Amino acid sequence: MLTVFSRVKLSAKQIIMLLIFMLVSSTTQMLLPTMISKMIDVGVAENNEGLIFGLAIAMIVLSVVACLTNIIGTNISAKITTKFSADLRKEIFDTVQTFSASEIDKFGTASLITRNTTDVTTIQTFLSMALRLGLLAPMMAVVGLVLASATAGPTSSVLAVAIPVLLIVSTGLIVGASRYSVKLRRKIDDINQLFLETLEGVRVIRAFNKQETEIDRFAVVNDETRNISRKSVAISGMLFPVVQMLFGLTTVGVMGVGSYFVIIGQMEVGALVASTQYINLILLAIILMTYVVSLFPDAYACMKRIGEVLDTESSIKDYEKDEPEKTCKGTVEFRNVTFAYPGADEPVIKGISFVSRPGETTAIIGRTGCGKSSVVKLIPRLYDTLFGDVLVDGVNVKKYKLDHLRDLIGYVPQKNVLFTGDIASNLNFGDENGKEEDWKEACRIACADEFVDKKDGTYHSPISQGGTNLSGGQRQRMAIARAVMKKPEVYVFDDSFSALDMKTDKQLRQNLKESMGEATLILVAQRVNTIIDATRIIVLDKGEPVGIGTHKELLKSCQLYREIAEIQLGKEEVANEIASA
Image 1 (cartoon, rainbow, N blue to C red):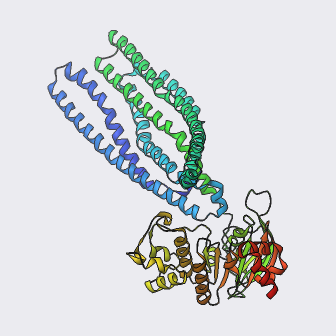
Image 2 (cartoon, helix red, strand yellow):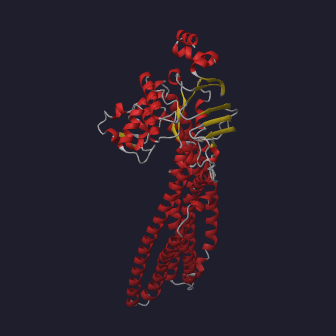
Image 3 (tube, one colour):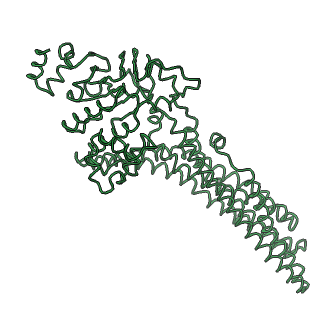
């Protein structure tokens, strides 16, 4: 909770203005019963029409003032809370942007979305009620107690018993309900995560006819959420019936005590009426405070969850000192690198060393799950090494400012992500100042021009969320074109040719070779044909390099590479290549 308010400040000036308007509103409302008392005891009893008329006018004016100040206060409250929620969302978004892949994996996509949407909205609702009712109600209660004591002293003693009882009971119920708030939020995260998985995997679910299985999984989580929610609602639902009962008992007590003092002549009828009004207003204020407090457990749970995000520091630290001088432009070097994902039992890659120089192509191949993608994720520091060093341009990547490091790299991830907009806006992710001639050249190199030129709007054709209006191969070529737009020193392709046919694959590689000049190319591939001309090929098995060399060298020296080549190219062709070498 302290984390949230330390990162997002409330305007002191607006809070003071709100307090003034709420004080005026509560005071004017509380003066009305006193005027009613005078109207009955003096105006009506003494048949003083002038006093009655004057008090009536004064009551109308006070009612209008109370209404206007309340409206102004509500508008100020709305400005405070909407700005607070907008700033809080921005703070969360900005913090998440600094996270490495480890922190994002830790929280989960669904949970981060919930924290930045539903949780912020819950806090905004609580803050809105707290600033309006939470400020108005205590003022009404205090002013009401003062005026009730001055107007009808004997009956106000009933409140000395009623208010403590009311506060004790409501506090106990709220504490009981708050126990379930954090649990409920976690279950909502589980529901969102499951729902997100189902939406993303809907084709797989239908293809394997697993709809019923997924329905059953959802039902289990949904039932658990329902049970926790039911307990929370059952406890908090007791609050208002108990308050209403105490409200009724207090009113009976006030009327009974007041009637007795009227009968014995120690209290006027007008004072009794005013006393009843004050008791009702005071109890209403307490009910309003109780309502605000009943919102607190959920808001507190949300603040705690958001605080966890804001308090989390990225494991990938930006280098704060002056960057050392580069010694070899366009060079990527791995020095005995070992890496393990957070929480993993053992490293996913072990002892990898190689140097890739300008103009060279380094390819990585191996069985599925051997750590190929993990290797290239270390270059732009999506993760950090466990042991060993990764160097770009002769400088350890940990000694770069992240912006500078990633400016040197054109990275195409295994999962091609396009953004809502058009083709041009997606290409300009690589170069925000890109022009049409740049788009044409990048698309030509990536072999994307063959489908872009056929679209009605060409480079201004719309791209839907995630690029779902393009095929897998088209998305891959768009992602490659985006990296080409950047004109980086180092190209990193993580299995970025898998959706391309052989002809397009070959043409694209030829275009890249001709256009990239002195840039370094590092690529992960599944197909031998894609890497056959690479300067060096690194063969991984269970995260360890079992062979490094050219295609022909590895056919002779590396059994795993030879097996992969025989499966893809055929034993006869592989045998001929070995013989010719």
